[in-house]
Length: 200
Ligand SMILES: [Zn+2]
Image (tube, rainbow, N blue to C red):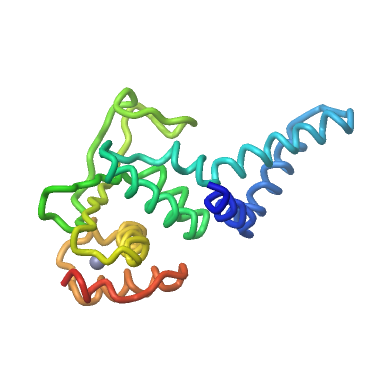
């Protein structure tokens, strides 16, 4: 547990999150008439704590959309959280908001994007105000059956890269080109290459 907390703490210190905290504090100051310095400092701490939590292991674990509730799924959920914490803030935010991760233990599907789906607000618990009646979600289907234990985060990052690059929305795609694009982006985020070795 201590180790996990250490990982989360180094992640929340990443520059993008720090910039977001400072920007949010600036905006709060612009829109407030608080004069008292101590109260102001408390308000700043509140913003900092909230944003750091949202970008910590527990915060991501509790906010991203994941389907699957066996003990094995729980392990996979943790792998996805670790992966999300390693990728840049904006990518993490978009993925948390727009992707539903589905853990498949028995089916033969190995990582695949399918179109998108409209869900009603009551279909998911979610904080914030991203729901406007309907929300479009994208699927990442996780199946690590043929995947080496130490490569699960790399594979997850590769799939997130496909999503960020919009590959699941494109028609007439060249498989070779999109695989390379996804690999390059995952590598840019600090993950290892080699997806095709165990999937294609
Ligand atoms: Zn791929």
